[in-house]
Length: 183
Image 1 (cartoon, rainbow, N blue to C red):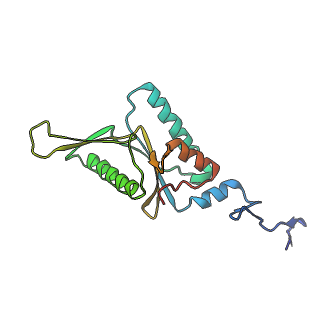
Image 2: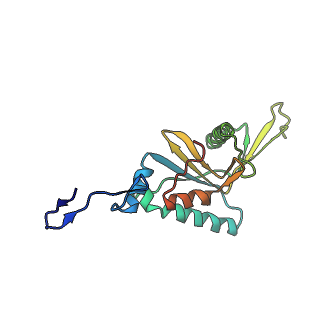
Image 3: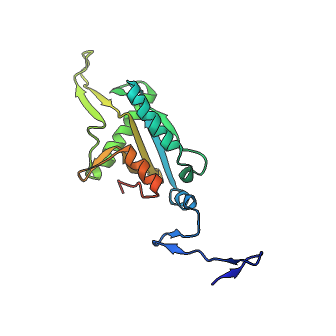
């Protein structure tokens, strides 16, 4: 049913398209609504070459340019380590090891894997301690998707024989598609 607007024009009722979008709403509003309860974090490690730096800048620029998703405030970009050996006393290093362990658990439950993007090696301690050292190598870029503090998207990873890259996640965000690859 149409209603008369104040200026005499007829106001249109919202029209549903494809079951979930409103045809006369701006597209950025629906993207914002779609991701309203979603938390994104982009992780970048120190780049070891100018080519990697350029790649990270492109990713970071695309991430920040998703204004129609972020509603003004772009999500955090965290810096993490290129490599961490455990055990460690450094609180920052312990935090990324815990993050890696969470990634590994969730991706394992989903039947996927983190390699070759993340690398984990165990070796005997070089200092002669009886406890072996675990070394984790982190990817150049990683993007996490959380809902209610639960990890529901992780880029990069392998799932069901398919590679999910950070670029894939950014493409999906730009297109207003789901970025949940672990749910």
